[in-house]
Image (cartoon, rainbow, N blue to C red; front, side, top):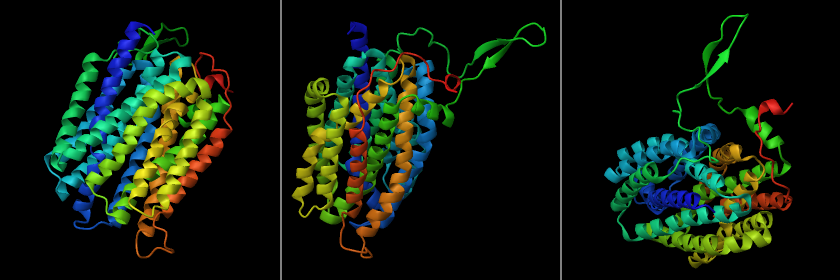
Length: 442
């Protein structure tokens, strides 16, 4: 790999580490903040579950439209220019809770977090993946994606570890500061580089000029507005490759499960075993350490040997086992033991993204990653609408039968569907380097 590209990737990894550190460190604390604001003094609160689920659904609805747009624009104007927006707006909700965590400030955080997450949720990762693709050959992408995920996992570990030893107030203050630091570092050091193109200096809001001529008149210059991706663009992209379509199906069910975990698991542990901030941090720390070691050391060794397709299936099968064990947890030590499965579960996303990236040309990587992210966002809308009511129902006294982990079991079923689809994916030659457009598909 060229020295310049290696340096660019190093700056990207630092940027992602700082950004993920800031966002991950608030995860163990936000449950207690939410419960205190909405249901003070209680370990089970249906309102908190519904409010969090509704927020996830609205964020998912927004990202369906934003993610493909950001991916397309990054192909045209560069990853750095598009990274600036999500990294900047993500600072705002953190700063609110850094100032105060009373009920009124929590509602302000809730509204602004919902709005800003429509832009920032997933888009930073999507653009980072596209940036890696710009600088890494196809044969090295699976390992590079694994390293990128490993950097995120490392940030998760250090962020969670910091939360373990900080007060709730200090947690949000540090998170807001690091989030600002990440945005500044990205703007100063990250190079704007898309497939070594040199036509990325024009402002985003300034359209190109197109020359037209009508009825023999002298030609005139009209602005050519950038095309916003439509549903037809998504259909064309999905029809371009059977493998890409299969990867999209896997992405949908995997995201359905992932979003369900966010909506259900921590509230399940809070109600079932009375977990607090520190116990959440310990649990997440185990998962983060296992995932970091696995992605940085094990995945680069396994990917060339097994291939992304088999590694993806293995990760989904282990993820199903993990959720199945969580759903029937009979003692407080069971969630801690089951979390060790994270060492293999973390292979899912980098393998899935690598498979998708090989089905499109070098100038379509933002479009492809935006498409996968948009499909995942659609799953993020549906998931809370399913799993939040299920979790609230089966943790309440009105449950139709005694199975507190029933919603977690349903998450395991979604992962099993994703696993079955992943088994059908077969290695195929990489897609030739040309543009996918609605004009090329009759």
